[in-house]
Amino acid sequence: MKKILLSSLATAIGMAISSDVMADGKLSTEKMNKDVIVVKTNPLNCSSLLMTTPTKVLSGEELTQQSKASLAETLEEIPGISGSHFGAGAIKPIIHGMSGARVKVLNDGIDVLDASIAGPAHAITSEPLLAN
Image (cartoon, rainbow, N blue to C red; front, top):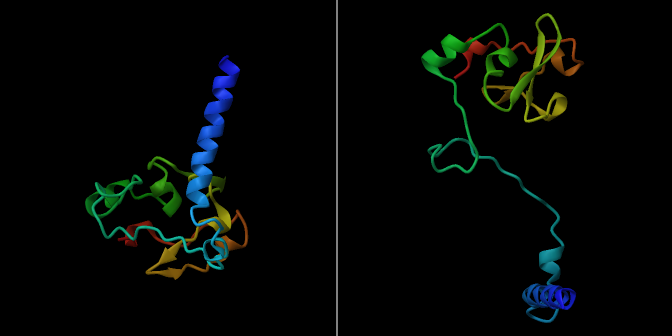
C-alpha cells in the first residue's frame, strides 16, 4: 500500500512538472539554445543588508590595524579566505577554496601582472596599505 502511494505521488509530481515545461506542446528552441551565459557579481553598489551573500569590507582604520606584510595575510582573518603559505613572503589568497588563476588580483581595476602568476613561489606585489 505504501509503495503504491509513493509511486502515485511521484507520478503526479512528474506530470505537474512536465506540464509546466511543455505548456505549449513543444519545447521552445529559443529557451534551449543560449550561446552566451553571463555571470555578474555585485559591485557593492547596495547595502550589505540587501545582499544575499555575506560581505566584509576592510577600509580606513580597520584596514590599517589589520594590515600585514602581504595582501593574503591581511585578508586571512576574514571567514572563507586563507593563504597558501608556500614560503617566506610568498603567500597568495585562497578564496572559498579557489586559488591560482581562479583568483585575480586587481589594482584600480587593472590586473597586477606580476611574477605571482608564474608559480606559487612568488608573492603578489600589491601593497595592502594602499587598498581602498
